Length: 348
Image (cartoon, rainbow, N blue to C red; front, side, top):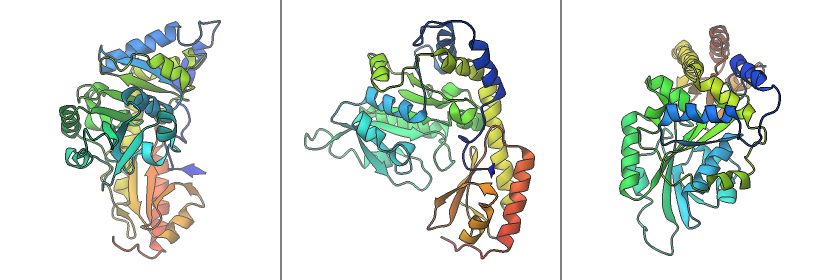
């Protein structure tokens, strides 16, 4: 089945697979004490700053949970958007594994603001209440929107003024940087983030994410947390080789910019189709639209995508590094054909 369901569905990039194959020669010291890991860490410092301490893990949930474990004490909590991956799609791992309470705030576009975060700070210093410590944002967000550099900077400044830390869930950080036409450090380090979960899997890696700790002291003892959280790879060179392929040249940018461009092409192709209503700005590699449930049912016979909000008829169409312009055109044509025969969705 052709798919616009998730960038996780995409194949691994050939350059990434070639890097893994190249690393698959002879023996290498285990658990990250190998030349590939050292090179990957050098590259992550080049992209995120000399203060960046990086640790490779298998997946995004682990990266987020480990960041929160490093940033919070047992009586502290995390402020997030209600749609945040940590709140909706991580099976309770932040609560169960990191042991932190989440304060989930409703937002129309997946983005937090200083004003929203301020609503959770009224009991600071009250020993009867859990104490907020971390503000976590997703860049780009679960709604396909992205924070501007000014919005991120304002959140970081607000957080630090109130003795909070800023974590960036960057499973699609490359998409945000590509869309803003800035380097990776601009949407993380320079914006004031204290910790970043830097995604690779959604941008062409076979598996692998990087925890990047930017605030002095956060990395102290982190190696023990990673081991305790089951994320220390014995054959670490194969995780590291992928990040070398991603970061040594411009593969991260090429792949992210392409998936963004495919989403823009798709949105443009269906914007004027009767029965299709795009409901979020297309600012990365996702298109959110409302179509009739009957149209969704027919389309999903041949095309894979997710229903985001069944009550509203809202769907998500996600593009990937390997989405082709021809696939976008074919999908857009199918949407137009099916929606023409379905009742129009009600406005909301």
